[in-house]
Length: 141
Length: 141
DNA sequence: CGCTCAGATGATCAAGATTCTCATTTCTAT
DNA sequence: ATAGAAATGAGAATCTTGATCATCTGAGCG
Image 1 (cartoon, chains in turn red, blue, yellow, green):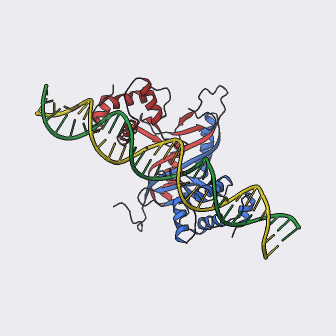
Image 2 (cartoon, chains in turn purple, green, brown, orange):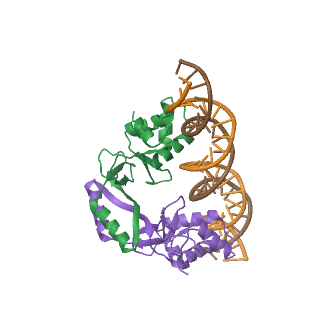
Image 3 (cartoon, helix red, strand yellow):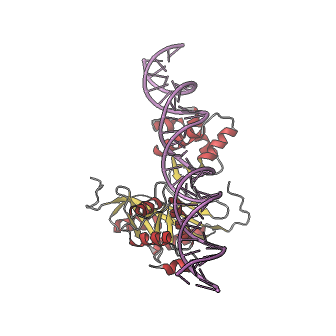
């Protein structure tokens, strides 16, 4: 019930927004597509439109509540902003997503950007590989 | 006239393919969208379909002749494969794209992936910032 | 040099993801 | 409760990219 986040972001506290936030907070998978959220809401018996999901997620992104990531394919995924910045590793086989943070990489990025005369504002880093987990339980949707 | 590249890739040497390759080789901008290539060809008086441009670029990518990049926005850009791997810095203001290669970052990526039990196969790294170029028409104040 | 046919092209259609439109509904402040 | 502003839902619209299919073209052969 973190309605405070919504208010703080200047967003009216509505049912669809709370429900979407709730799913982002409680879902097993930390990285969800708009469609996945939409389907989950429908299955919960909510009356919601896909357009609303996209609209709300875009607003959440602007408010800094969620991050939009383009991990692969054409569908963006959204993850709840839980404070720390991190990058991602995606398994080519099962689609599993893991997070990491590496200060050395972060520092070198800043240095490289400076070298090129850029003031770095953001970056996107995704590693693709095969997770060598034999019991890999996550199959792509 | 690098028709040898086409033959080597098992692609018939046709006018559209040569023209697209020529544009990729001679364009000022090293990173072009399919649409940009298409428009440039139309302006040169070529009779070509957008579908062909996409089809050919996809074939070039499969043949290792070009790289497809998702730098920002929804449109992929293509760049001629000139040997060395590199990553990109994009200016948020003017859209300029610069290339860099940093061995430290590359190495750390491999180490991080290994740490997570992944065999890294590929990666995507894009830095976003403001180029502080005084000639940049959109330079921030 | 012209012939043949697999492969390539171009026009159009189609698909998938995301945004827009607008009439209707829901919050928030009063 | 009520009014006004903002949000929602359904579907249309858009944008990028891939698929279809009839027509055309290039490479090898005579």
